Length: 235
Image 1 (tube, helix red, strand yellow):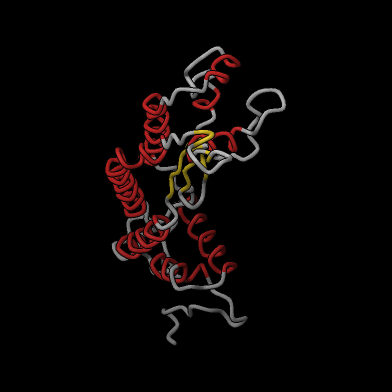
Image 2 (image 1 turned 30 degrees about the vertical axis):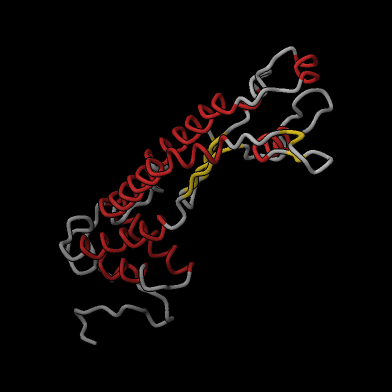
């Protein structure tokens, strides 16, 4: 190899970061190298960005016309992988919710009985009639939720394309956070439409014929959880 064309690796078999261009380093990051090599490559790029230095081939670190297409491609690929982990779910998410009252059942158990119902002991009728408010919300608002998730995917891909080489982690998607809030609101607002009258004995005990509203605890127990593959948030 000629003297004015530096070797990618030095005599010890390690990458000679000082002699590599930004495009070469970006290529190493995206080549499936081991995690230690990727960390070293990213550290080399961070040092150059902080020092405002030039790459080993004499091209500017940030303004290199060769670096941008490679970096943007890698950023877009990383964002594409990230979209596979996008998820938002809502309902009674935590099985360790506080008991509903005194030594009563956990809210997760109570919500299951109320949502799916409990058959009568004689096999005829319901001991607790079903009130499927979560399923109803999904049927009514599912298309809108899918549209919001599509917005989230586009947001993540745009961020990856615009940030080809970055040392800071991507932010939690704003559209995903909005979807989480919308899903929780849509589900909770379904509860009033599933008012099945209580039995007379239950009304006498609770002093109310609003089976899902007697304490407000059911609505308050609903949460949405979203993840983008790196961070998980709950609202």
